[in-house]
Length: 136
Image (cartoon, rainbow, N blue to C red; front, side, top):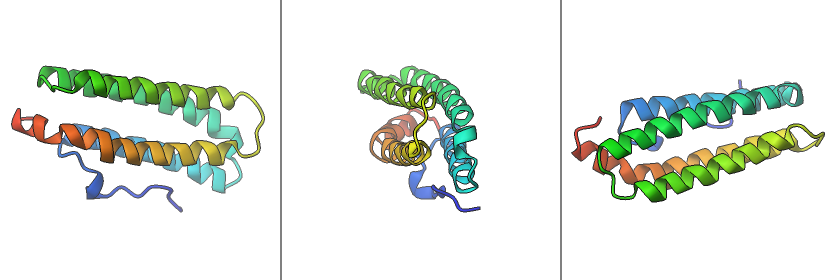
């Protein structure tokens, strides 16, 4: 199966449970990509985006709880980034309701960029703080 994103240690934030959740997000995005390549993307995109939204909400809630318990100084900024990303994912979900030939490409491309960018440029900022607080 051709993957859109291949998990790599360079995406690790150094927190096992967060890395496992990020890997699950990668799997969800790859499932959408595989369906698209198989010609079934339009039939499963709505369901995949629904699952992604639900999983993302759960992941963000857990991540924010962990950051709060470790007194992460940039928690409010991180939460604002989560809110913005969830709104973007919800807008994509709404688009799955309307016919659009490029929708699966748009969704998978956005999700690929969003996940890699968010992990690399936002989540990695809390790694040292959580590790110093004993979270691994």
